[in-house]
Length: 115
Image 1 (cartoon, rainbow, N blue to C red):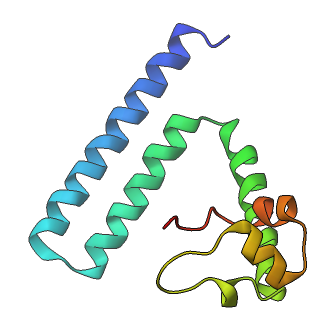
Image 2 (image 1 turned 120 degrees about the vertical axis):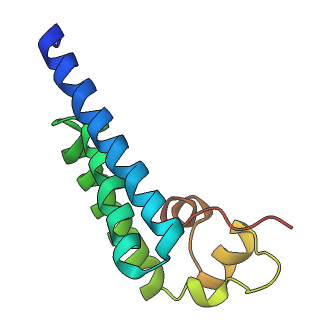
């Protein structure tokens, strides 16, 4: 369990990060330039990092690597080419086109848009 000093430090870091994000948003709404947009992203990442704490990174990194591998595999199988620009496709239809199991495709892809 974290001590009170750890919580105070976390509170201060989160407040500072949120203030930085607010300033970046204010600047962007005035300028609408790429530098301001990048400042928003950097500040938002700081808020997330502060909220997650030191132990949150490894899990997020592991999940992101899993998503990357699954997305690559789905692309290699040609899955994205079967998803229509308009309308929807069910997992059942997609698995038939890919000659794969529905449960596997469900793990590798986001839910298709519903009609």
